[in-house]
Image 1 (tube, rainbow, N blue to C red):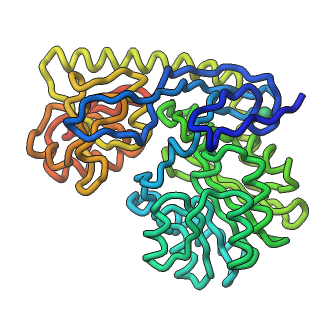
Image 2: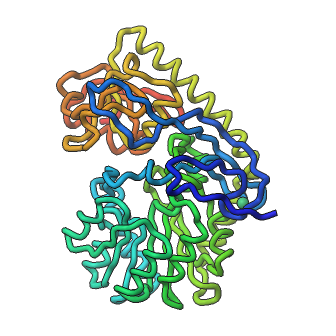
Image 3: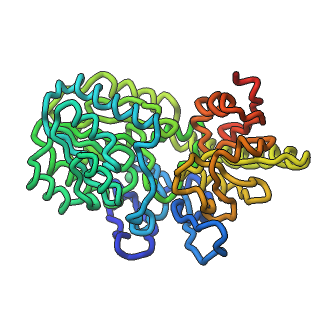
Length: 426
Ligand SMILES: [Zn+2]
């Protein structure tokens, strides 16, 4: 029995996922429930008394038919992605490097010259900038005010949510594209079939669709339950993304793991038969199969998540009993899930430090009264411990913070909570 979900967009509310977002099957197994979480980007100014705010159930489901792991509730994107949505891809070094690498890799694999490249969810134009510099005409589609930033830097960008009208506009204004990219957005948009159809409407006959998403296998391996929040509607394996693309006559021709967001997957697809698939596809599919039955792995994952929460409490209890001050480091979206699921508040985490100039400085972490302050405070106050919230890049951050003079210990909360002394890392 195949059904289609009602749309959330425009309702101002949410829709419960009672059939698979991709294949429509009603056979959905509950994998994990993290409780009710506030929208990650609704941050109140410091000093403002707490206002009424929504909280949405965060349940992860697995489809028994197509294996897709997905969120059990879809929230109106107008709530999750307001025009002032603060995320800028250009500010994260690892993302900038990844996009430069994507341009080099796709040019080498596809033999690109000067074909049109379209990026869906193009943010501030960081990815397209690489193709533009290499001589490609480019066009971005981006719903937030980041579109203005991109246009100001010369990356042509249409400010719109992506879908059939935006696709028609791209084709009318720029023609059909040889490459369409969608990085870290393909998991974010409801009505995924319409999105794939809209990509196909833009793509020329032997064109290639390249998509990057957080990778389900990385999520399981390194216990990244903190990537579960309402912006991430689907957590793809190569198997489940291939299932989706196949439904639209697309075939995966290249796939590999990439390091962004703590472990992502990059997938190339073309119209079936248009291009020859590289060996990388079968290799990664085999790796997924060899890792074991997904349902069993998810059951083990659920137990590990619960244990990790309790272990983190135990670690923090010992430190607090000694009177230690603990500052959080970094306030990415995923920090909100970790803080709210584990149940941290300002008595446990004195504050969270963020880079100077971040719009998050001067606000409270979502759902708490933990203030976000300028990172200079970490070096001035020298708390006994710095606890990573962007823990997936802890290895990159520890030497940097130590070099800048932080002398306390570091707490890495996941996958196993651990304390690292400054001296050990240098
Ligand atoms: Zn399914």
